[in-house]
Length: 581
Image 1 (cartoon, rainbow, N blue to C red):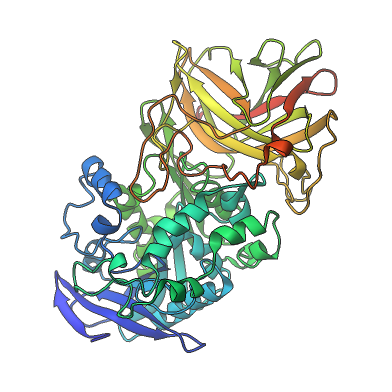
Image 2: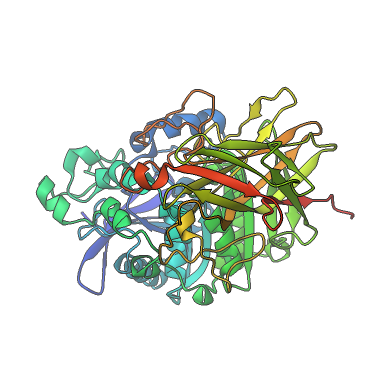
């Protein structure tokens, strides 16, 4: 029976608790809390991945990788209640938390029209927070925790300021649906159409046995009702078609964007250095832009879905939530603003605390591109020269001299290029790469792809207009509100944002900047994850390969980089000197 209480595995559990929305639709939640009656701090998540679908069943490949590489994750839990990208209640309830998992409208066991990140869904989320805040087992303080989807929607709902929301932990979740996610530099990413097919439509309400059964209750994870394909199609938005239909940052995106002046709740934002394409920029931009007076940024490396569940991740979250939800005197009030895992080659990370982003002691260093020598160097190119490449092709790579000492690069990057094209537009893909003394490229474990470069940036030349009020020397900000086609052969200046990174370059190693017309591909064999449509070849699933968005007649001309007087092409690097004390 919905809402019936059972005691098992050291918890009092209620399945399918009904939460009625303001328009009458009923969402369903599972509630895990301590056995003794009393008031608890609440950790809540709200999203479309089906609360009753076991991690091991929905994402078997990711689960196997996680338990093999991080044995502390399954330790101390029956793992019966592990679900994709939300907390394991068996690791939180013993510490006096109530864990609430809500299936969002139209997903899992909650009926309704499925429209991810829509204003309606955000309002539902706020309603769920207010519901949890007044339950007899709640202490009135609700915290939000989760990875990716369960982090992204936290930015949105925090801007609505539900009164019972006391703290948020956004773990690897974008903040700007256009720039961080669907249109990198104005170029359409095909990730969301594929993700929607693989991870959301597969657990839509009404899909029956296709959504599997709960390992705990034996019930269908996607509701007792089985709907026809036609009915399910009518009950959901077409995310892939919508992102194609909105090539600019218009009202479709603005209604899904948080008002940063209203994000005032205490927050912990955790990003991934290897999260280019989705799981980095938003965490940093959200941290910087939010009006919260109490905010912290943590950035780590490694695989996207693992760190959240590790002893490191759980301990960090518990200190944060313990302070704000339970009033624990655990020292969080003395926690430095930034906790950075400084990345070295070989997946080595060294923790360091800082006080601001970007770091105040950053030595902003300009490297100039020389098309004649194909080098990155401290002096502008002389004399004037050019280099050309095919607009949808492999492009060209500029190489630095070997570094004379171990050198840390941590922070946002940017580039300036002067280009022309023989066609009315050009897509530029910038890739910062690391090379060993032997000349072999050194790649990293990205958030998803095990063969990721140091950093990436993108820009569609017709989207080159900057917003002067929001652009910074180290973070160009483009308006993306209209297309300004190129005149074939005419030289234009482009400022290109390259997402933040962190790497300590060893002495004798080089960095390279590749400018090309397609997604980066590593020379290593492709990798696969069971929840992704395509093999990963260096960019993970964050590809820009929709032919409707990049027709050859428009984008496959000859692109030329021009240097000379008044045309300095450069890469801006955030070099970090060692701390003096």
